Image 1 (cartoon, rainbow, N blue to C red):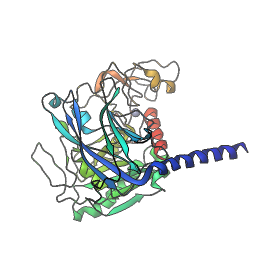
Image 2: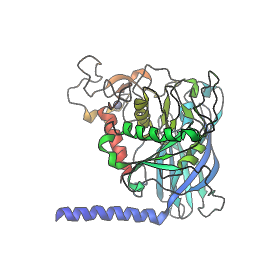
Image 3: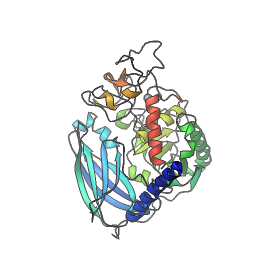
Image 4: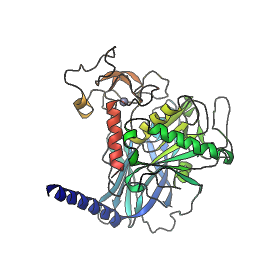
Length: 423
Ligand SMILES: [Zn+2]
């Protein structure tokens, strides 16, 4: 009896929350495109365009972000009542660029975009940026009337789509959309088999392998004029639909795109939560930014690792646990404050990180010596810094080229995020 009462309580909660969704939103997307510009010291937001898109891929229940990752936050408030009805944290290429040397010398503009379920009534939109100490500051606020006839409704990039893996209603699944980039019309057979291959890669890694039924994977056959991608240093430039390029921030392997509006246009062909751009290239590279997009190449001996590693950034905001590779960032994680990411710590506030998962008696910091490979502790080196930043285990998929090797802390962060989408 107790179980029945509990079950009906849970069901009531769910239906109540879903009716909350119906009270404020329609089951489609409002996309807010803006330009985010500035330099190392400051940033400004400029509204570009509002768009209506046909699908809402997100949850109907978890409308408020319960995580605190990412440099930015957007909030949607009902204008009449002032009630917060939707929120999401995220990061962007601009936030990373602000830690490069170039940002100390020039100002630059980046395409950014957020999506929310389509409001039924006028709303207030608030954009927040974090300061160096990770405190959020309101930076840009305006009102949107959903009846405004200037909200654009056309589909800019209509392409054929595929269901690569389907386990149910997209509102209760993590929906990944894979976008073809640098594939010509003649390459679409290859894109289809690539999508199957990368689906198998994702579900080859824990915890994804046991959570397979919480995912849908969609694909959009985006057709590019030319094969491949840009490789600026040797002067290779290709006409591709999503504008991807190696040498982002002048780091050879950093493969990203600055054409985020095109990425959103292509993704809107299906319901989605996470965007993966699959680039038709055999050169080692990729990249990903939390709740923004992830990128991987389709044909390289490290492709499985890159795909799963990058999705760790894009989906669960995991930090890189390596510290020896060449990157363009300066002091990406200040060592006097606790980073937001779940899998790195400065030990400034270790209680808020994975301390409770560490076996009592484990030395902190934990020495990276033979015999300690399987121990969970705090090993110095991570987040692009050899000193002052600590990682949970000696090795992890977020540290080195290794497959199905997430440390327990990364694994838990991924599972928590799946739970958020899968309700
Ligand atoms: Zn890890």
